[in-house]
Image 1: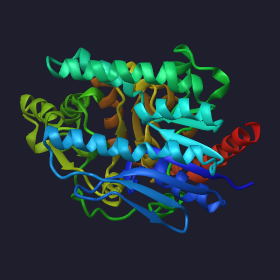
Image 2: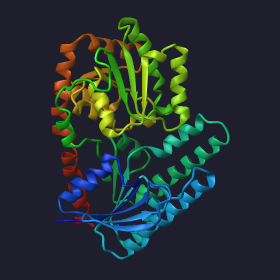
Image 3: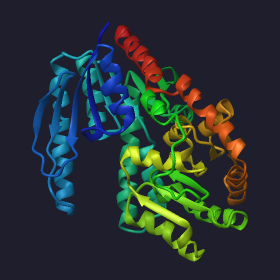
Image 4: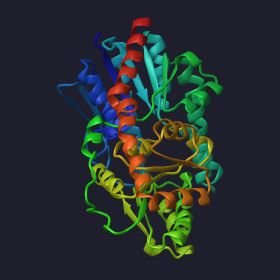
Length: 407
């Protein structure tokens, strides 16, 4: 049975996140399903348009030029205008299923309309957005406090009081997120965790051990790959670096990724300055995916720190899977999913959330080339068996087919 799916997402067009681009845009389409998309353009100045491809149609929303408050307001209005197409499309009854990902206002409208039009609907929650905004509000001053609190409160009401009760299926990012949404009233039977994965082709492309091209050959280093956000408490890595250098004096820390704002990166650099570590840290900024993974492949050790707060505890860490897929030994802190992956794969060390344990584990791996190699060899096969998007697509396809058949 092939499905005709309408997919509305907070991702911009063209989508870059692998869980959208690969899982839906490639894997499910390759199995004969058709997916039409409602997305806003990522390119400022783009006009509203329709694009027809061999895989499906895309309704692309306009995006204004500029960074002002007026431009931001206009962007949201234009995005909502494009999103509201979904009502007419559902009313036409041409789709077997509607999926809404990480959109709360239009998600609530769609959930109500789906009941009216007897249209099966699934909601995809990739991150605890309401909780994140409320957490930001707790640590912000006025007027940001008010903006974060208002957004978090509204999203929380829309998600837990309107969307989830009316959705036929709720996909979440981890087992812990499933537990969290059930505690807030979701029916356990309709919540399905879908963990983050990686393309099989990427595993093969990094299966060898290339000479260093981006990192100087003789530098012992550990590396963090991902978003630099204050909520992630990544300043711990700077203090870890200080401890590592006491035992490995020429060690360096590479941080590959950009901050969500300049304040996020400034937060890291203030800690770097306080500890006089300017010469021992390299911040590359945002990099193309291929370059970012090349940096990670050239490092001696990769680290995956997830602060023990309720927001991050419910996530499915993509970077951990990426590290394992490219054959790198990992030091990760105790976190529901990270603990499970490290235990099952044997491809790294799981430590507590403190500088000393992180530093000791990193030093152990920096000094023991044999242990690094043994752990690194275990990662790709584990990912190949459990966390490629081909395997994940099997699960999602089955869930969607069952949902449509039951409707």
